Amino acid sequence: MIDDVEEELDSLEEFRELVGDIDDDEMLGVAQSLLEDMIKIHDMKEKIEVLEDGLHKGDRAAFWFFAMQLEREQVDMATNMILGRKRILHDLEEKRKIKAEEENPEENGKGSLLQI
Image 1 (cartoon, rainbow, N blue to C red):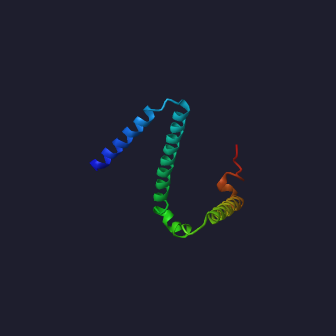
Image 2: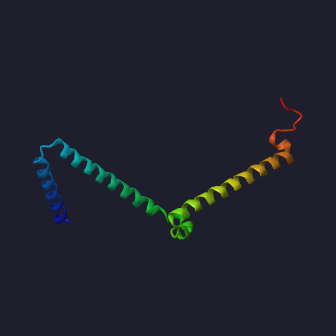
Image 3: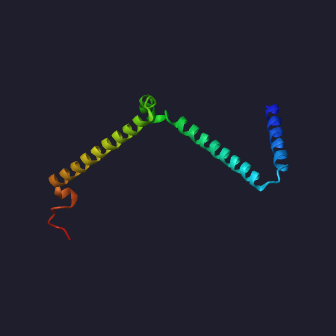
């Protein structure tokens, strides 16, 4: 552990010396751009790790077993299937509500003789 920290400090010191020897603003810009991209990659990897850790937790576990076998295009198709199924369920629920209102207008405030 201590050796790793010392190696990291040595690497940082070497990089500092390298940068200290550069007098070209354009080259420093290249180094800065490189480091910014490395930060972005590191952040993306952390986000991916968090997402991957959550894929098989809780209620997702039942779907994860099947979904992990899908290719990218199949994931898109499966997503569309789910959206279609949700739309069907929503439409069925709306129809059920309308039918219930038609069958029991008094319960919904419709058809009452005492409306103000």
